Image 1: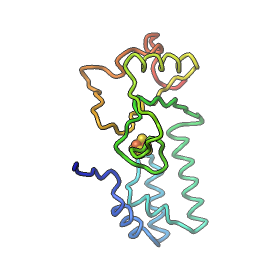
Image 2: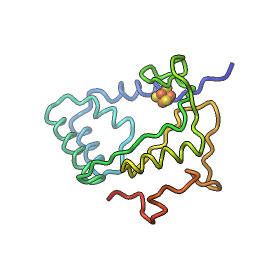
Image 3: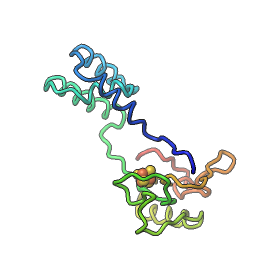
Image 4: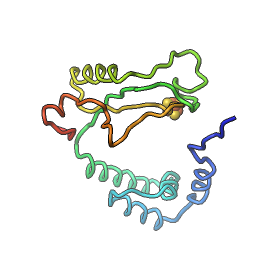
Length: 166
Ligand code: SF4
């Protein structure tokens, strides 16, 4: 029997939530100040913020979140078109139709030609960003620097346009 791969460490999450409970106002504000630098915060700090109930501190967190969002994304709404390259998955997330125990769907892995056609179709619909999704297949999906991925050139790149938002 194959060894189960632990993707989500629930014990660690619960430990962080336990130790992050009931922290002082000063500690919460220090984490909020760090968050405002927009360089990320640690999981244990996130656990502290998730358990704040004081309305004043909650407002500080909301304001900081808004500030970081504006700093990183500005007033843009960025949409990605998800493209499933494969719906084979070794995991069993209960909310997901692609979970391995769901026998009611047919499984498919797109060929390079099919990926090319799908991307062209999305480009024709006006999409500029494609999110390639492979679930967690029981086979290797080769993405190497020697063989560029995707294995073809999207039209916007052929036209010399970058993937940056416009
Ligand atoms: S596709 Fe993602 S969400 Fe769905 S079962 Fe697999 S790992 Fe879970």
